[in-house]
Structure formats: structure tokens, C-alpha cells
Length: 204
View 1 (cartoon, rainbow, N blue to C red):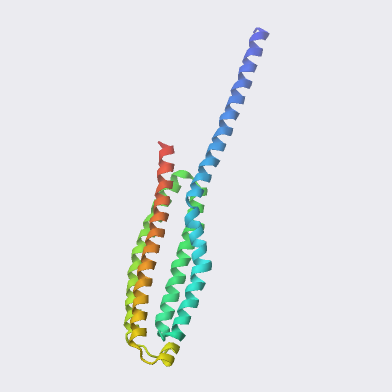
View 2: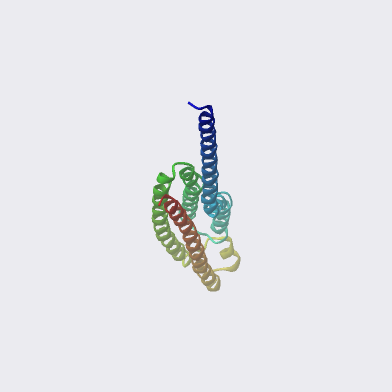
């Protein structure tokens, strides 16, 4: 065989190998960029999960123990509310800071399926949580109509204006909390849906 032909074949092999390495390198860069984008979509949920477990739960514990002694809510009501806050925050933290990142670090095909399952679970969690919150707030509202044990009652007497103010505060707190939780729920589930859509668009 002509030595020139051998040189040309060797040159072509080297060029093909260099091209393959370039394509592989580009694929790696693209995958890293994709995963970085997907994790960025979960940044809001991850931040909220951390804030809920490390800030909102301690704050809720302080507020409701304060309400127990100042207003006179029963210990069963206070304990149920605190346990509910802890459980809900723990679920949010586990979902947004463990399950979702683990899914996004794995195979993208299974990641899309897992994200759909997680979104479905979050929707069920929201419905159940909202139902329980409304039930507990009705419980608290009923107690506020009859309680007279707290520190405020001892210094003001059985004041109807104080009782009405407490009832109004519960209603306003429930409305503000409901609007806030709806916004967070919508934001997290929308971001998760965008992650699924991005993965599926790349696979097409």
C-alpha cells in the first residue's frame, strides 16, 4: 500500500478521534449546564424548605407557647399546632432538599418521572394540610369564645373587646397564612413542572 495513503488514513483517524473528543466534551458541558439550570429551578423550594425548618418552626413554637400563657389556649390545641408545623416543615425540607436534588442528579428519564410523582405528592400534602389547618383554626376560634385563663384575661377581666380582637386576629392570621401558603405551593409546583417540561423537551 502506498505510504501516502497510510499517512492520509492515520490523519483521518486522528481527526475523527479529535472530533469525537470534542463532541463528548461538548455533551458533558451541555449536561452540566442542563443540570445547573434544573437545580436553579429548585432554588426557591430549597430555600423555603430550609427557612421553614430552621426559622418558621421555632417562630411558631415561640408564638403558640406565648399564646398559651398570655391568652389561655389549651395545651392540646397548642401541641397539635406545633406538631403540625414541625411535620409539614420536615416534609417540605425533605422534598426540596433531599428528594428533588437526588432525582436531578440521577438519570434524566427517571428524573422527569420522579418530579411528576413529587409534584403529585405536594398537591396532596397541600390539600390535606389546608384541611387540617382550617379544622385547627375552627378549634382555636371556638376556644377563643370561651377561654378566660390567660394572663391577658387576669389583667383585663372578661373583656368582650379582647375576645373579639382575638377572634379577628385568628381570622386574619388564617387568611394571610392561606394566601402565603398558596403562593409558595404554586411557585414550587410550577418550578417542578418547568423542570419536567425542560427534560422532556430535550429528550424529544
